[in-house]
Image (cartoon, rainbow, N blue to C red; front, side, top):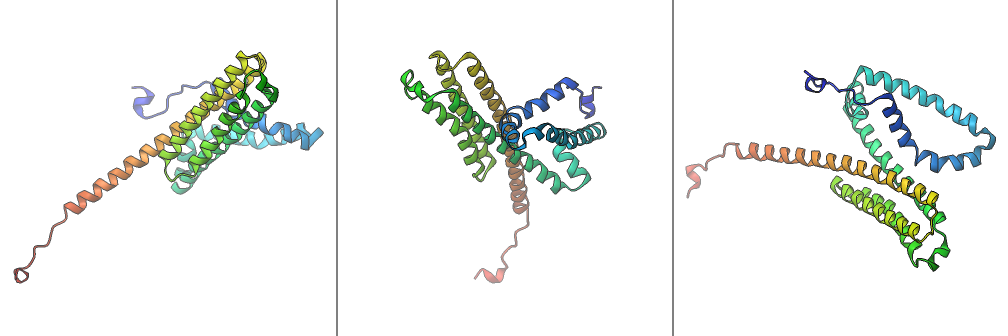
Length: 247
């Protein structure tokens, strides 16, 4: 019997895969958006500050490694707090991760907008009229769609706007190709922006899958509760009218 049939998690990731996932989560948000302002403020103290910031990260890594080996469960961000503290704490942690990912997507979009505005000069209008404005509008619509989706009342709406944001990333990628074809972007600048757009698209797709799956689970639970309520109501005995009330 395999580990999956026993209900245990099968080891499918190597140490290189785990490190790659961690690096991929950091690159594109933390490095590209925070390092420059932090270096401007810290100056010569940047390297000692990074060394100090690495200490709690090492502690978190050790705790995660210990918990992962002790309680190997999928969805650890919810499972561990819900099991060892309280289910409501696990619920809040899971929601905070969704909110954090939403903020990271918006921040990454703003970084991409800044890159596009610098890479495509204003003078590009002479070669390809409207290209710069279209690219910037597409980049801005990514963050706008995610922010608008967060203001909706259902996860289905949030998932729909995340899908719209992913479409805006595809539109931006098309504008980047046009800029490269017209030689407005160099090969190096095009590759850097293309990789950033591809990374953003992957993260938006993952965010969309999580929100969509959660919406489907909540919708199925709501339907089950409604069916249970209808069955219990229809199965209750009805009181017959007494003969005295017939007249």
